[in-house]
Image 1 (cartoon, rainbow, N blue to C red):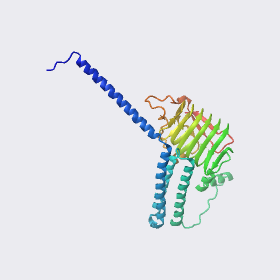
Image 2: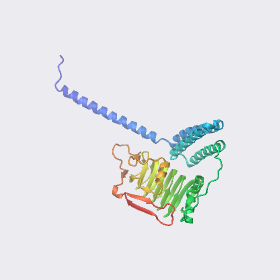
Image 3: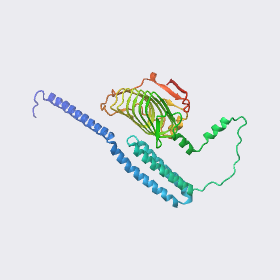
Image 4: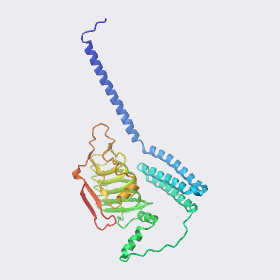
Length: 362
């Protein structure tokens, strides 16, 4: 048999250890490359995402329009079911637009929203022409209670107003808003303010907040998307957003936000109290702190349901820092200690003259 050179066994062991170490390093580098590739895919040019959205949106919109056109020939016994089905398709199209608002230009968001509104109008037109109306019948008027006051009767009349009127009223600028908060084509723009309090409630399509200093903004109701830019020492309290929140260039601010998606760019020393369905993303930011959503106002539970935000799903602490690819905790964000958290309750969203606002420990 072949004789082994003295010390050869130890050399083989060292070689095996060295080979294993080199293989581990190669695997780690490969994993890091894959991770960077994944990050690059997530951070791909928004225009590419926009082009993909336009392609799918246009195709789905045309399919729905064709289906609406075929409703005229639908058998009477199946018209209600078909109307419900096509209305659900429009709802899904609306949700896809809401999810894409964080990378779509505002003009394209408005154009897409107008296309969806036209589909909804077409459905209502077909429904009015094909669905039999209920036969007219006299109804007995309900007498007011003996102790009912004129204010009670007026309050009940307001509560039972038709939905269309409610939407129109919510879309118009309210008296509680600052005169500098401008509405353009259904969107709300709050800009160029210093040291003011702005309140807005109701159903709001898109909200644009920019160039504010030392301001407090309350947004109570449902929104489709929110864009925030260039804020200094501000506090933003917002109700549920069905789509995305895109935030850029904020310093020394406090945000109370609920949304499907939240993306934060170029911000410093800000606190975020979030309810978010997906991972919050930060980029080129430092000194950020996070905690669970803590804002409350009358009927917020209904607004959360409308925005399809499940109270049991909240990824506020699963923050993704695109500028920190290591396994260790990013130094750019941290969790707000529990003893610094409070519950913010807005008791009366319609009263702008008084600060009907309370804070209690969480």
